[in-house]
Length: 213
Image (cartoon, rainbow, N blue to C red; front, side, top):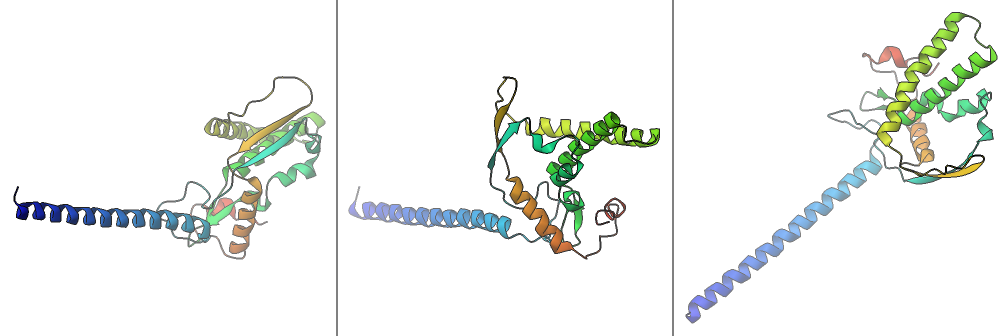
């Protein structure tokens, strides 16, 4: 190979290396900026953010957590209506999203509401709290709906935490996907943001206007 050809090949190789380095640098910057933007967008996303398709989950980051529970939990006695009323935030934990404040329920609070509904149906039947057959039928109708909600939720999450098989008192440690305290804080913040703002006039209006009553 002549000296001229060798010099030309070396120049092309050097040029190709420089171009490759520049392209890789731009690619790294692109990936970093977009991943950073996604994280920032998630942490700073306002309650009235615009979306093309309705979000499938609460648009906020929640840290995983661990819950330690004692069984049986005497704090939540079947007959303690006041204590059970605290498992769900005000307005059943519903939130509003988007420019017009479209209402959404959060699965966790819907499921807790259902657990409480089943508890009350059981307690009412056990303690004779229902004064009419209609009241009993209404409560049991809600409980039947709730069994489906809970079955779907349990199958969807498919919690694989191992539970001891021994009888009697036991301590159970569960690893949770989201910190429930943070989820409650988000609900409180969201409801405060939309306080006093009328609901959008659409098919959801009838079912949600009673939240604040």
